[in-house]
Image (tube, rainbow, N blue to C red; front, side):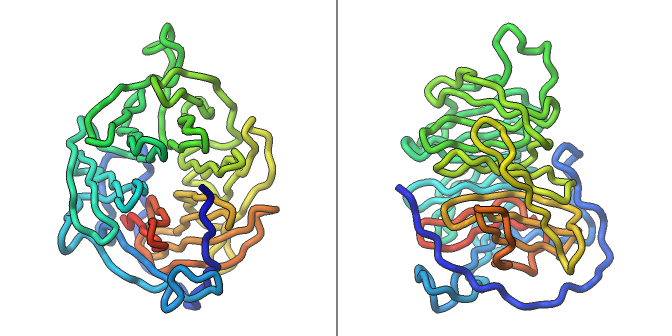
Amino acid sequence: MKRKMPTRKAKSSTLETIRDEPAPGPTMRCKRSRYCKCTGIRQEALFSMQGSSQGGEWTLYREIGERGVKFDWAFDVAARHPDQIAVTDYRGKRIVICSIHGNQKSTSPMQRCPLRIAAVRTDNSLLVLEHRASHVKVLNIDNTLVYKSPTVPLNEVGKIAVELQSIAVKEDDTIVVGDVERMVLTEHNPTDGELLRTIPAKIKPYFLAIDSNDRVVISGYKSDAVHVADGNGASLFTIPPSLNGQPVRYCGRVYIDESGVYVAVHNGCKTGHIHHYDTDQGGFLKCIAQGLERPGGFIFTSDGKLAVADC
């Protein structure tokens, strides 16, 4: 069922020039910049306009991390029906399930550092990509492993180099995985992970989002552009995010629905923004969040708040 997103009013601010280190790429060894302080999960709400279609200003509502749930490195986040948030604790090597109010519900240990996470709408299963793993893990509602799925034909497993960096779910629950080594997207049957097809990508798919019309949004991380394509990989338009009138250094997590395209961007520590663009040609609409460290995954929760893994 489609969800109408409220119109969001951008905040006004001036970014400071600060001393920073380049943010670690998703394939690098687990290491934080010594100038960054990870805050775990931030929740922002429409101030006095929550759930309204008439607009409002986004303000910090809650931080989950220093109190309650503590993350070693909150890296990505997914919305789980009806009222849960699933978080990849990267250095903690676990998946943490929280309520939308920030209370910890459960944890699931992982063999490797979990990179990306997505939720399947129909059965609440979780899809997890681990650091340098060659397959997708599917966890059921109890967070136990159902199956592991490779992204190449079975007779090619171990013979073809892959680097899986992004994951998303289509409206029909088809699983889509981004492979930056081969610059492709692979589609998989949600029941057993069977490889359905492989689609070339225009840029390295470090981050991925898909809407109900199968429009695909791809961010290349150390890239100053976001690519939007149709379900077959044909280019629709490109979004060139900027900060202070200059191209951004890092384009991160992306999100798309009928209200627009959302992109997390930053130029290093404490410069994080989340920008909102239209779905026609990618025109800039507004900044919906700023003052972030280095925003990782973000979602809109069932109660209309914006939850950001701010690492």
